[in-house]
Length: 79
Image (cartoon, rainbow, N blue to C red; front, side, top):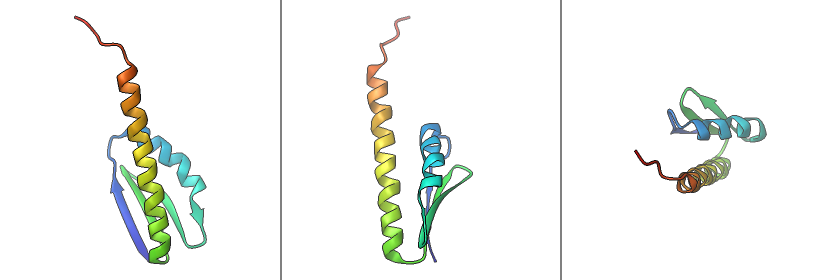
């Protein structure tokens, strides 16, 4: 059994996205699930873990990009 743990702690958007993916990314040879502040991928073999790893980091990249774009869209606050 292979296992990958990615700590995201208080990154609320990432945790929400992976809560949804947790239900979708389950197959015979591996799965994604959440633990407290962590995304955990478990797989029966290295190839399956690589596939899950790709899914995890691609999703993290998308979440980070969305947050960055959203931050740029907010108008500056003036005291």
